Image (cartoon, rainbow, N blue to C red):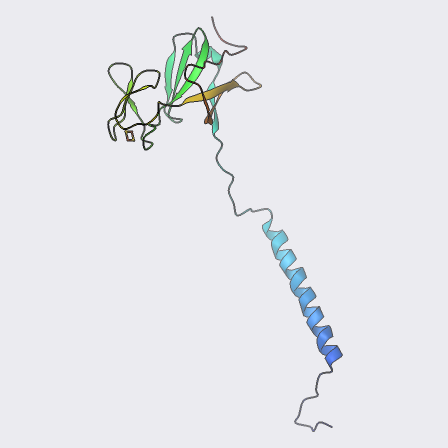
Length: 162
Ligand code: FES
C-alpha cells in the first residue's frame, strides 16, 4: 500500500486509455491543421507552354512579326501561319536577326537562315518550329513545348484576310 508521499501507481488499463485518447487527439489536431492549409497549396502550378498570338486578322500573307515576350517569330504566308522559336539550340541564348534576314546567336556565334537552318557555329540543330493552332474564339495559339516539322504552316480556319 502506497504511503502519503508515494504517488498512486496508475493501473495499466487507465494508462492505455489515456494513450489512446492522446493518439486520437493528435490525429484530429493533425487533420484540422491539414484542412486549414488546403486553401493555400504549397506548390505553384507550372507555367503553361501555350500562349495566344493574336487574331488571324493580324497575319495577312507576307507578315513577319516577332513576339518579344515569347521569343518567337511569327511568319505568315499563303499557306498559313507558323511560329519559329528564337531560342538557340546550342545553349539557349536568344538569337537576333542579322542583315541577311537570318539569325545570329550573340553567345557563341551560331548562324541560322530565315527558316532556322543552321548555317554555321556550334548549334547542333535548326531553330524549332512550334505548333500553331486556333482557340475556340478564333485566336491563334502557339505551344512552345510542341515542335512541328520545319515549314509546317497552320492554315487558320477562320478570321484571316486573303
Ligand atoms: S548559345 Fe547560341 S551558339 Fe551557343
